[in-house]
Length: 440
Image (cartoon, rainbow, N blue to C red; front, side, top):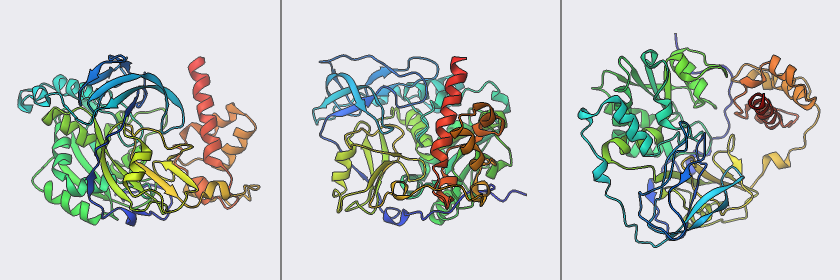
């Protein structure tokens, strides 16, 4: 019998009270917009505009440069200032299209892209999703059209909408479930319709009773959709853990969710699919939670992609005290920022400003062999052993003891009484193994 959870995990202070009751507010930028060509997994998009071109809001400015790639559209109207290296939320510098925003927001005619759903073939729907530049907007950025085109199409029987939002402080998905449930249900129906016999699951943690109530009401007459109340526990929203909690099926690092008959989309992605197919809208905006104990007025904003983090923080009243750390995303898997002049991308879920930097303040010491890291690991591996192997640069041993099964969730580092940098060390070694495999 399913218990709608998984083995391991942790219960950090969730910090969601800061913004969970803050309705989504529209923020319209008047400043330059920056569009990194790499804001998705796969090949960087290829620019189709040049310096001096005038563009419209919703216009294609960079096209997918391969099967695993994604289109990028401008969210503002204005003039292309150039293509240059800019810092992105992950900390790297990538080629980016910079557009001088004219503040007019002159737009393309989205209605031209709309066709009756009942007249569309499967390939038509997937093409619309690809043309709109829809990617996984929970952070991974995997192109959604690729995810919806598995080799084993006939074996897909479960479409899961990830409404867990298990990362502390994040409430953007919660607010969308509260405020736009119809888009979630209709977006899920579009995806279910691509796979004969597939059922839809909207998985929501049990600390969100209002979202559960609303979506159960909206789906009561939908025989192919159900709302599952999953246990509140981090990382409940991780793809492998969510699949196990809702189906009892295991997915390891050598498998894709499709190998278990599942496809998972987060809330923002499923809404983007709805907007692309039913409204003709490309991905040009997203909801971002701006929060933390250093933010004057924590908020949930829907913003044009390309908007500066600094601008959004100012829109939330700025800092009421100097932060020790600013993070793109949540505290468990987000990326620490070293500057604020970075753009909102398709995968930006939150900007978090904290007065304490728990990682920097911690002084690592020797492992005391307590086993806490093993007990909370959702991947069922031994983080203490893997860190020893990683530090010894024993890549063969690291793989032998299943180091590639780490999902980099941070649970082990969170509970470690010795404050060892387990997740960071293991993650770095995983990247090295993957790089070696690619070269080999």
